[in-house]
View 1 (spheres, rainbow, N blue to C red):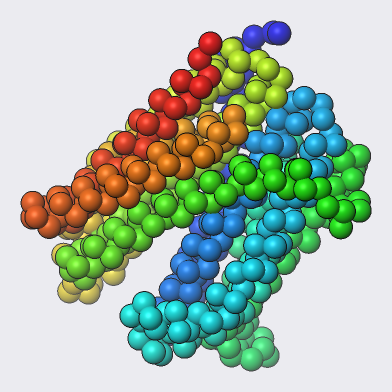
View 2 (view 1 turned 135 degrees about the horizontal axis):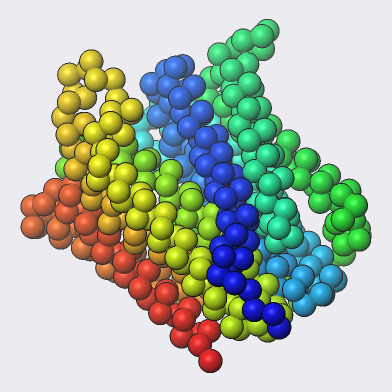
Length: 448
């Protein structure tokens, strides 16, 4: 086997990772446009849509484990030259996504009583249920889009994933404008209009990606949708085995940040607002790590499929190094320009803005440590998925987030009276534990 140079590894990782990072940022833009446009419409509908969208996302993350399992499975099968397995794994990923979306829809239909039981105000719960009853219809499409994104990314066709997501952002803005506010002769639907826009975007993305995957001459030989109705229980069990832990890991990580927001709310409204701003900024840079992590999954899976362990280890080293470079650059940015960054999110004419700005600056500086830890843990998860190891990482991540991170946050914030800074330092501790244990796990498994 010809050994690839470090620069070649870096170029190939960036060629895969940067479009995927851009796609992740565009996906965030879908959420941001919903929040901004609902904010123009009204406070109560905004609260309901934010609550509904976050509820939808938690369920989506759980179901997306099957789609994320398809990525390393297809990449490894391609490296082995097993085209039949490529089709089998992707089809069963689609089957499981369709089944999951159908099974969870009753949760969205009866979301009003659930939101009330969680302490939400009746008017917010009612609008949230109206939103989720429509948005939930798009769960199957959203999950199938993620499967097709994984399928195409495994072939290295990450740019089409980026362009389709960018087109979806534009479509989302247009449909929101028409249906939330009743423009261009359409009815004014408010939060329900935002839900219709979400479903429209998901169906649009599914149709475009399915046509591309099924009709592109270079991919047509895989016959992805031919006899789609035929069951393949062996492949389905393989995708299930790999995908369920991935989904549960995502829920555990998402739960960490939801819990942090809840505890920050106990400290105060100003602190919660600053927390939200700092977390939004950290999420933007985190998307770069997510893109590189997915690229690392693909590249490691390819080397694993060919049995090239030296190449696999070098590809992993380069991916980790690139992630570290991004983390260091982010730390430098957060430490040198925290005030201008936080100020972008505030109307400085309002009296409460000065206090939020001051607190947000402190949290953003703590987010420097956050970047190093968060980047390394998501990279480690990507590397482990590349070698199809997900069960033990799920346990390591859950222990780090919930048995270490959350208790540390609570103790530092409240008994030790460090407030929001202590809360964030506790998150850093949990994320560093996840990063360290997951990296240790990966390198132990791939050593000779």
